[in-house]
Image (tube, rainbow, N blue to C red; front, top):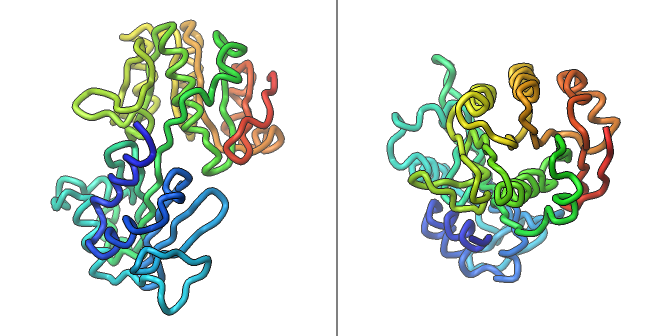
Length: 295
């Protein structure tokens, strides 16, 4: 598995002219791509770490939007939504309501636009689509895996700092040693297809997909007896209560949270209750490990 597979996945869901231009783009950009954003009426942005390039029909890219950059139309946006919905809006109503999809190879898709007023609201008149590329970087957890094995670990960082990538590789390393359960609510970490992870998450790792995070944690503790549970983006009181219950049964945890510093971590009200249960916090900066702090 590599990032070019994710790029190919994205291309398959794009209209012909955008797909053709992307495939002509500078191949040196592809390994470092983090996102491809389609802005209706404005442009196609290729995000490469901390910069963005805008696509032209001949495959050239420029730093700024101009008269020659591609301008996706409402029809382009409809084609994209139809494709990622597998041409069945009814069967993907949940994704259209929540505004996100997960495709093959762990590609995450965010959708913005006007939501209907009926019920929970379903997106229509799409204004932008963000394809986020999943990166498998084997060995990126080597720096901390040996030192923190057997500890409860919080992986902290800002958006696009590489939290999920590090969690995935840590799961691979630990999951080749002891039984682990990966709580992969949105199938972003394992990118499983037909019950098989397409990313390497460890031989002894069981994967739970589709259920609420807290339900997966409780279910794993009760039925799978894992030495470790891995989960992404702790985000609610329910998640924290489930983690506390799991730790009470002797299970270790590795989880990610949005916090780019220790002081930022302390400001998160929902985390102050559980921070003392974790042994170490790993802080990321610019997709690299910046600090490992004992809690």
